[in-house]
Image (tube, rainbow, N blue to C red; front, side, top):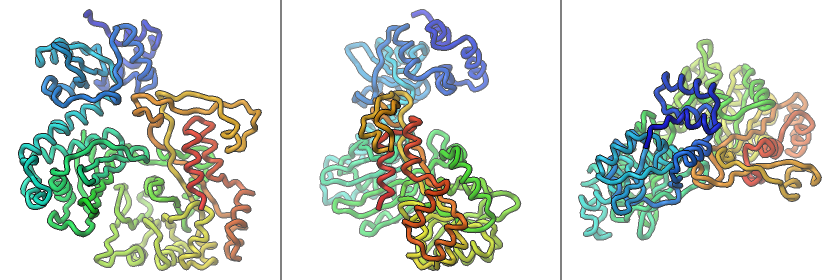
Length: 562
């Protein structure tokens, strides 16, 4: 096959202009990235356009790697280092023909390398770069998840282990290479899939591995029960836990590096009927800087956010259920407030983000370092700004309120359904109304909604019911959007998540109403009369802008109802 340059191919197809190609080639000289990756990164083309052009011009078939099962035996034809270097993966062997999926089918050097190593005829197929990387992580991991399992079985003699013998034989093998490779491969795959959590769940006859991606759990693989204790023990060692203790819950912490990214792992072990369940919370310490823009604040919400942070004293509360992004928003706030002129101190359980210029303290109730005692200690440290991970009890709430009244800016979280109910939640835990009216500056309630996948986003005419849900006229001619499902989003129609905010700024009248003991209904009525935007209207805006779907918006709206 004659050598064809990707840029010339795309230009001749009318997909990119001469100017775009020149810019991309200049960037390629600077970054040493593949041209296709640069074109996609700078939105000159989409993955779909690239694939369609290559299919048309080269006559190469596209393969959806999410819809095929690849035998681990094929890895012997394409070594891991070659697969990762050239972003290729073997998918099928038919006689002497080895089919390989490639993100760049114009990489003829890679094809020749595989042909020489495998001694097979190489037939290229097109796949997205993301899909290929995910399959490499799954198929190889750190030498391959499936292969690691087979190696574990061989080294442990798993086929000869009886259920009653697992605990006695597992501990001596926990540091063997196959176990380490297997655990690392799971973590690497979670990183590539953008998973926030890994669940390792013992069942009656197997161990289920699930990952939480964009807020939903997905089954990834199963592990033979005979290997259960070995894997759990390896994780315990990583987390600094007691491997011999299997009857009580334990917590652990580990730091590992995956593809030059520093990953902070919080571990929780819980005994169940069929053994110990482990949950790993993953936090990418090397991810891009968190700011008000990266969390999704724009327009009126951004203006309200800025106004709240301009206060030199008072309490700003972040509310919402677990997993709604409160910690990330607080990190953005503290990052913006930190500086040489102010002393910023936080109390967290646990410390999730390292924030430059902020003195971060870890809660340790075993040593008496509670939120209440820690907050009292912080007040003797000459603070300007105080971050409290969570207000859980009346003592912490009262101290925080007094600190706010005496000239400190206090940021904290509170578990309530919406911003209005936060006021009465403070009353419920024992804070006097007059202190709330004096100390509280505002409340930010938030939820996370899944974003429509940009690669398969399509418009449609909403039904009358959908229009009614968002207060739209039945005669109004509008377009809504949803994802049709594609390999890029694993056919879910969604990719990533977006925060949606409900920001309450207390007015002078609302403060008076709080001190007089006004009900939630009265406060809500007064808020709506001002510039308050409810969660429903905030979600409506994202739906009309094509950021998320009606279904996701309804989940967020319904979660605010008691």
